[in-house]
Image 1 (cartoon, rainbow, N blue to C red):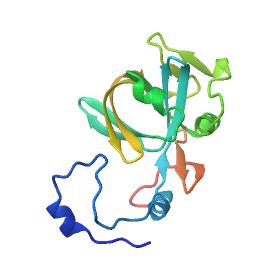
Image 2: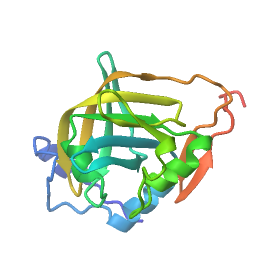
Image 3: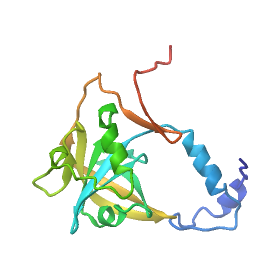
Length: 192
């Protein structure tokens, strides 16, 4: 993996737009970049929305908190996702935080070409129209406030409106690492 120091070029180019910006600087190859992030364990979330053709869902590991006041979160949607057009056109979405018990749902929503809502007993349609997976205890409904194109993806900024938080210490968060699923079984402290 070869990284090239571009700090001098970056300093001279600080005002360049981020979304879709291209430069003559050397950058890390796509394969090396993917290998880098395979070493980064990430929490698993499932994003759902409702569109003209019905409900859609996708599994994301790009979820992050932006601000607590006001409550904003951000996730990324790849152009290659079949759910991308509906998610990006939606006014609101549901973000579900998956745990070990939700592995089947997360895997289904990460698999191309399957009906993610085939089993009507696994989801409900909220009064506001969005589909919610009933087995996922921690979720929020949010309003999309901004979309920003970056490469072959779109960053989606969401303002949290309502939801439910399961604070059960026995639940094991679902993690995605090096192309595989894992569960976070216990907390590690700085003192061991």
